Image (tube, rainbow, N blue to C red; front, side):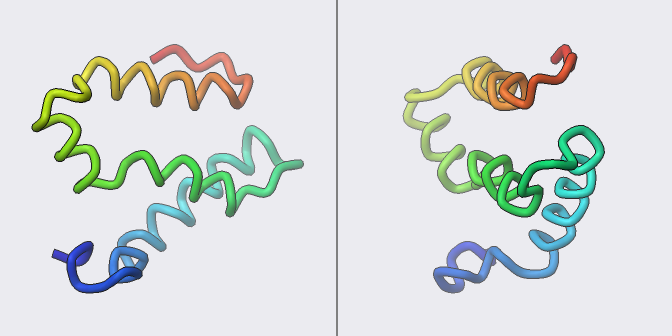
Length: 82
């Protein structure tokens, strides 16, 4: 519902909580980076309406979403194994 309430409605309390937590985690592995901006970049692909639309229309598969998110995490240069 929040995403349909207005152009910035989804950037409220829940988003802020996810954002702060993710920025904290990024700071642990990449303290020399712009952690707030990187948190936004990582959260952007998780926009529920976009993913739901792409999955519903068959333009994405769950496996493709996972592979894409794994690629983003790999770009951090960590030893993460998904």
